[in-house]
Length: 170
Figure (cartoon, rainbow, N blue to C red):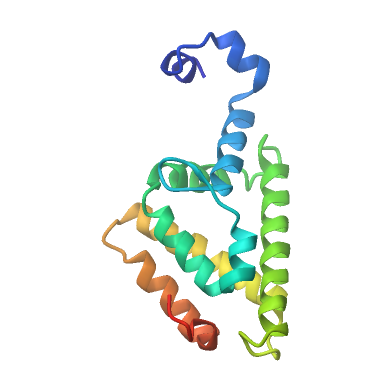
């Protein structure tokens, strides 16, 4: 936190006043990252994009955007793994994050089913969990080995699970 305060030309007291711990600061960074795209942190509403284009196409857009932000993805991956221990300070935050993501994606998939973007026979809740698992896993592989084609892998996921969602093309 001292390094961050120094880089921002702020006192450590100012940082601690707003973010009591390093984990609270990192959580705030990750929450902001979820609401933005690109390196300039341009505001972005993923849920609105899902309504407009469908979950699959919105996800593919987000995957492309995330290619510009490997350090944010790395922070997310490290904290997610560390917080798997129930005593970790960010454990509850990650439980809630994944709960909200799964719920939001399930609603997006259900909407896609209602308007005929995807087959209505699939369970939207299961699709959301599968998407989160594939997305996190592919991102982690890309962080470890940047030669992994994250876009191609995610496109293959959608082609294998809900190919009809890609009819209008990524």
